[in-house]
Amino acid sequence: MFGLSTSQLQRRIAAAKAAGLEGVSSHGCRVGMAQDLARTREELPAIMQAGGWKNERMVARYTARERAGRGAVARFYAAAGEDHQ
Image (cartoon, rainbow, N blue to C red; front, side, top):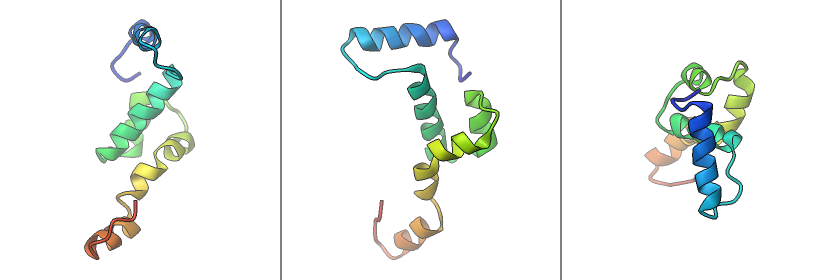
């Protein structure tokens, strides 16, 4: 997956839940990792490989906001000195 074995990920999720964090899941961790990678400008194929996705549609869906934040419209508003995120 993305550098953690299944058992390592399960231990981290258990620790988060023991600390009182609710809603922590392996799926959420994968989605968060995809979003973090998109923010660092990783390309879709690299994100797919890191998260073990075979279909780019879901990765694109999970990272749409991050990718939009660096798209043509975002660059237009940045050049105009405006922040529209």
